[in-house]
Length: 101
Image (cartoon, rainbow, N blue to C red; front, top):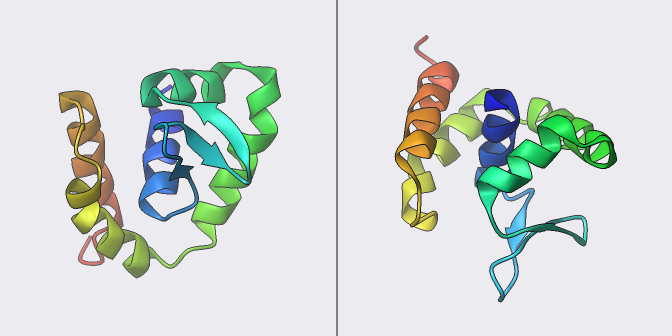
């Protein structure tokens, strides 16, 4: 589930996912839900989300690492309700995408 959570955070950071006025996350017009943890669990375990998960991963992999790193450094300014676990995941992603590594 950790990888699915990282994919979800990366997708949101890169603007692949958006949030509507009600707070629900969506991708390509498909509503995914409001709770990031529940969405990441669905991405990791539910068959109906497997295609969506694959598409998110493909789009993330197509992005330049420098762009991802830059966006990850700014993510705290637009995701206000990060849990401690999410902050740790983001710190790991920042380290992973750091061009100096």
